[in-house]
Image (tube, rainbow, N blue to C red; front, side):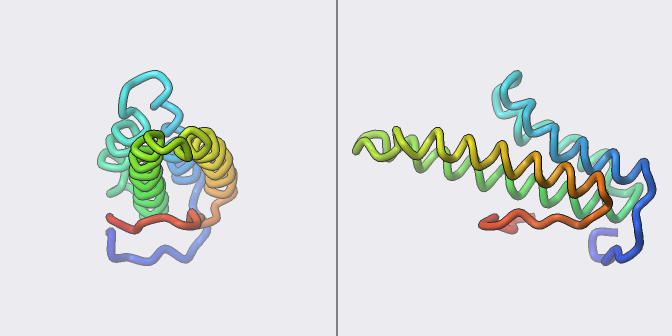
Amino acid sequence: MSDEIYTGTPDKEARTWALVCHLSAFGGFIIPFGSIIIPLVIWLLKRESHPFIDDQGREALNFQITVMLMVFVAGLLCLIVIGIFLLPAIGIYAAIMTIIAAVRANDGVRYRYPYTLRLL
């Protein structure tokens, strides 16, 4: 189903799982690397059940991988001080974009995060 393009309005269950895929990224505050592991597990378990879940789970995972890479680079840049300012900015950006994506997914809209590496 990953090659299938979904154009219809997703049902309530698909919208709910897409919402959970996006919001599960906040699990990183509880579990180390949870911002990637939890969306990955949800996506792997539910991607076959509906194309909308596959699409939004993949998008959430790509965004969280991108954020993890940005945090890694900002962490290295802490050695020359600029990373100290970048880390909070990345955190705020990631939180805001995750909430926006969750709301859009709950509305049944295929959301695309800006500035995201499409690795999956």
